[in-house]
Length: 335
Image 1 (cartoon, rainbow, N blue to C red):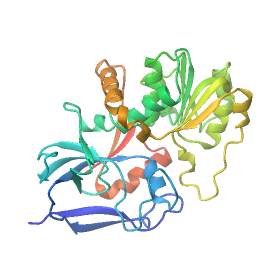
Image 2: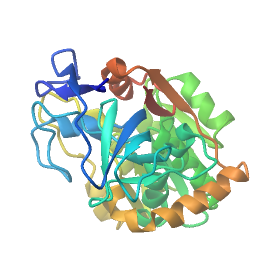
Image 3: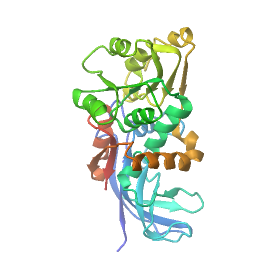
Image 4: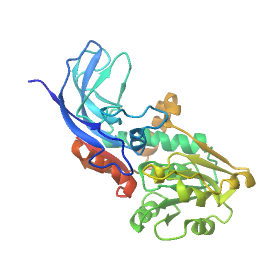
């Protein structure tokens, strides 16, 4: 009996939050494989804020998802059929699977890579995957963190933010402050993740609390949210302070024009630096970074959490968790 592939496609460009009019769940037959291809049954999908950006008809580091195309996303799956020399039946592989139950890996494109053996899939997709490499590269390469730095992280209870704070601790930061939404998330940061302090942005004046916690300024600010939180950090920048732009989640669903930071002049006064990056810039160093992260994980120095949502049909709800603050840790969809 021929296999049927369930896919979530982009039906309309979203306006604000992704809703029931944005995507469509459809079924198509699975095509026969060509030589050099393997069929991958998707097991988990990685849910990341960048997916929302890909849905817009706007320029980016990858082209927008086309209307009628499968929603682009990373995933992990098992090879169930193969006409490939590279991919064998039973292999567990990762790559851009998209929001669908079956994806094709191709020898010529080298489109998927094997997961590390002995590592649970959710962990491999979190601290040992794109999330971990993003945190490591942004903090240590782009931000050039030094021992003794005062480090502040926004979106700190998310997968990337929580990893950034823990890596900063491992590398000798003098103080690590996380910004998150709600007392439970703030308690998680200080009680479980090794942050020295946490600011609940929903409960108080962020700029004032940063000034109180960082009387000599912020040496390195790792930004995942943009907007008013970025402005508050810029207002408290130390001399030669660095700002790492990883994401701007506060503006991804904006229906009005997104304004730039008002306190950018702080970069001039404090001779600071603000730089954005994409994790794809560090693909060549992936094995090296992954090996170091795996060592910290084995030593118990690196903790992680995953927020797992079951069912392809719930992928949109899983994506929206990132923008409502409904998740703690890495969001995955289990098929």
